[in-house]
Image 1 (spheres, helix red, strand yellow):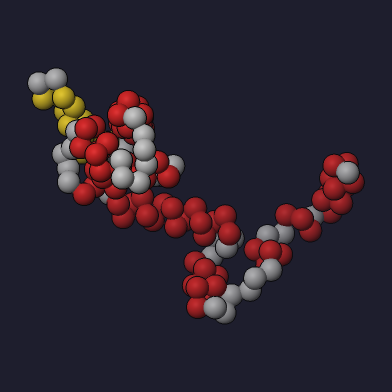
Image 2: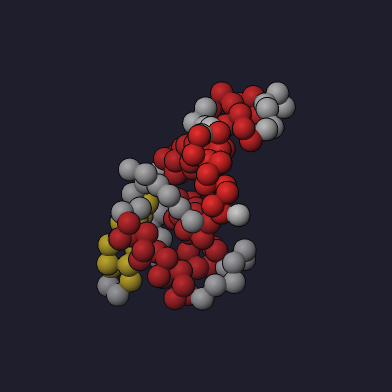
Amino acid sequence: MKVHLTPLELDVMKAVWRHPPVTVREVHAAVLPSRNLAYTTIMTIMDRLFHKGFLTRIKKSRTHHYEPSVTYEDAREDALDHLVAAYYGGSREDLREFLRGNGRSDYDHHTDVFHSPSSTAMDETLL
């Protein structure tokens, strides 16, 4: 399962990963120091994460208790895959070289999109 999380969803998931099972109130309290958001905003995000399949929930009395259905490691791996695909042409070795300070810094090294025969026509059309 691909785990594409927005920054806010990631903050919510981090709170869930720390101490499952959790309630919306507990996640709201955990997120509040860094994000001044309404309780209902956190509730909406958690409901969306549940419907995306990233959280499970059980209703106890009148309160939902949430647990992660994806691991932190899976989310981190998906984020890294996205970064590598977007900026390093899918090459983790290019990312390693960049982190070591040996990587090429030019954009052309990572994509051939702008060197295709039709790109000139497209550029002239856009001007």
